[in-house]
Image 1: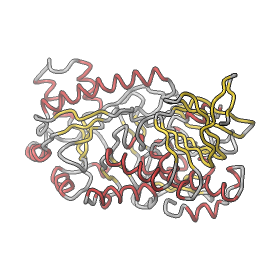
Image 2: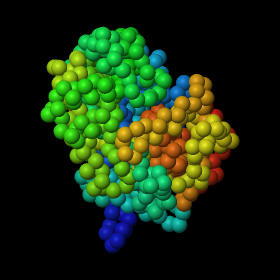
Image 3: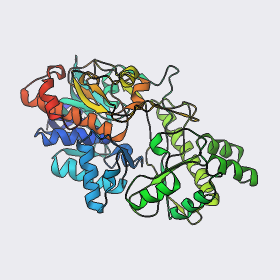
Image 4: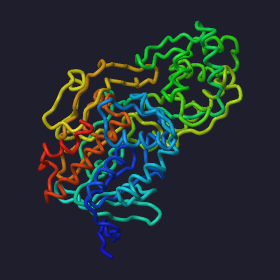
Length: 466
């Protein structure tokens, strides 16, 4: 066995591959599938014990996908529908999914079909580099430290852990250093949605909406009933008048902190494909940066505290939830933003708002700015209009400090506002697909620098997502 030496310690080299993918979330799965299908030897290291990241482990089991995205994300949704005998994809761009089914489906697509070697429970702990090139990544898991060599590396960790360990330049948060506030997602089972819808129709004043939201989230109770019956996305939001009323009628039921927390965003939940349960997207962690382990720990504890207070209220006062139970909480926090690795080009909100098109485009997207305020109390929604879209350039997925490092998913090179428009699940998967496809092309062409790409040939391969 060969070894590398790090700080006088010999670490075994357990694999030598063409493409190493750090992180097996949405972007990492897209990268691994694309690279593996292109016939190059691929290794994926994931710190958790399932693929899919935010989509599965964080329970963000609703995928926003543009009508122009016909890539790996669309393929996954088609497969989920086929297995469930459902037709949720027809309701795009909002598509509910079953996160447990998605875990198994991604295992099959990444390992069995694309042939990637996958290691769960593997944390990126170090990088071996020479100048602008990375030669090996050090992972740590049950076997202790191990090294994997590769020609190209793709950082899909969300937090930019590989690039950070390599010393890459990065940015965090807005002008004050705060990221969009994250959410701890949770699911509630045994919900009588029809009872809730009937109550909302009978008492429209109590269930009136006070907060602004996307136009496609402003769904009437009758339309929600129809959507659920026809395998389409149903969205229930606000409930601020009901919360205010119940706080007044039952002044001792919630603590002052719980009351304030409930009123900051109200209730937001949506339907799921399997059975009478809902996904709740109500919690918010204020003043979050996303680059500190203690902060992350404290955020998860605070998130679970919010979950239990929210569920207590819903079971007590929301019609249809009287016999419900708390199914699960995300095993990871739903982080919207942390480190953003600096690329050859920093994608900006001007690019988004001006619907900019690039000669080196690799992905198109339709999402507008969506900033969840640092204090967790409001959300800025900018809608671009039907049919409008913009490009992200190839230059934004290559780390400016290195010659063989890609950055895909929410750690790609963007400013704070632009990332808020470009971090949804299907979009991150498309960025990963672009990076995996590019790495495979370079391997086959015998190139040693990410900047030596044949961009026209790459764009032909990526026609399904541009």
